Length: 184
Image (cartoon, rainbow, N blue to C red; front, side, top):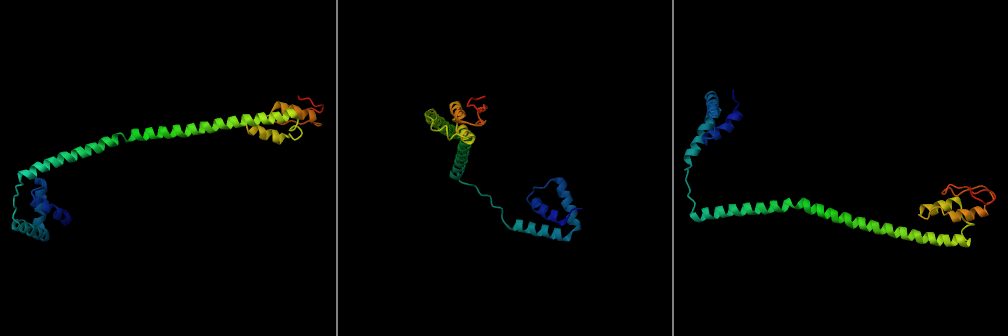
């Protein structure tokens, strides 16, 4: 059996001739047994009959404008769609430009660092050859030079070994200084 809520929704559709034959039979079966739904149906039917269904014929100007507007809306939607189609391509191009910019910046910074470290290496080597740094070289300072890209400078290690009195190495080149100033 149909509930009143469903029947209430179907009454309006029935009055507007929008129900299927099967649903019409179910609705009438319910209204025959439910006085409330039958009263609602009669009230809606009276309202529909009281309001004259006036058929309006639009002017030819309206019809012509209507179809022009429809075509214009189609074009506007089409233009928007065409713009959206290229959106992923624009995003990809922008991403490629950003990656190129940042990678070139990083490459420039890297090359500058390498150039600077080679300058540092030349300065350190000059001091080592003059004997200025050899007295102050320790395993830690040699390790710091290695971290900065200068590496464990073999000449510095050799000079340090000449001044060593005990067995010790810088730890970077893998060679040990012997007590007699030679390296292993």
